[in-house]
Length: 169
Length: 158
Image (tube, rainbow over all chains, first blue to last red; front, side):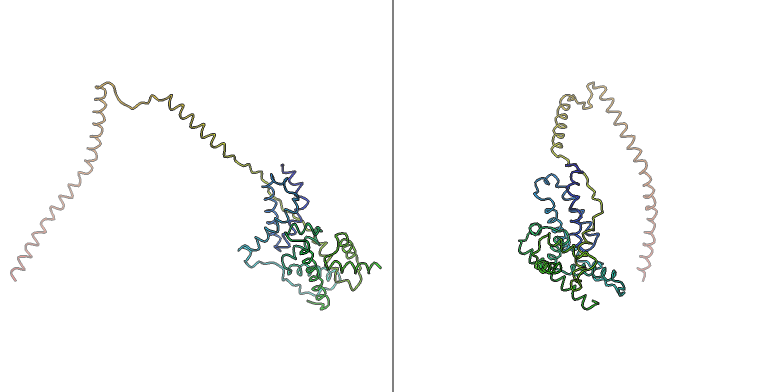
């Protein structure tokens, strides 16, 4: 397989791999490293690529596993400077700014979800995958995915309602 | 009418029962400028999903065509070298041990090399000869005995 053929296969979903990695690892740099690692692994196993039924789903599973390894590894136990608990002090004046702020809030809420729900929200609501596909990628059954998805969506909505009705966090 | 529909969809959405098509409908609705005030809460959520879909991986991936070295060829090369070795080993077998057939010539060579050894040996011995000087020095120290003798005499008198 030439480099070009490989890139043709990989290009359509490399961003999805990156976004999933970022959802789990939070930091952009780490997510970039993870994506690189996943793509390189695919490239090194390019002989076997034809055997995979669904390269995309396979890569997503690989990404998930890689990120979990990263999170579990000693390296990740160090305190990281991630802006997940950063709060804007200025009161937003314009509606646009306010909207932007609450959009950021959604990100923070998702970051607080358990890993599994995070991934499912990412795969379903951002990447638009089928429930069956998600179940295959995450090695879960269909109903479990549905339940987790519903729980995650409810949590996000509840927390958003709270921040809205209290005005300030 | 539309609002009613959206509300129903939202409920289904929260139970995780919407299809991708229905979710697209929801996303379209919430990407509008104005939404019903009581549904305002959902707007940032869908906006967030849309924004996050845009993010792209921009870093290059260094794809190297790593040529795998085939270790089979090492054994082939080794066998070839061995074969060549055996071949030339047997053809160039008349080896020279450095011996002489003529006794006179042999004697001459022998005495020559012995001469060389003796001359080198003498040179070495000559440089060691100054050690005699040390011997001389210690012999002069012998008169210290005299001092000892006299002190012994002195102590005897007491």
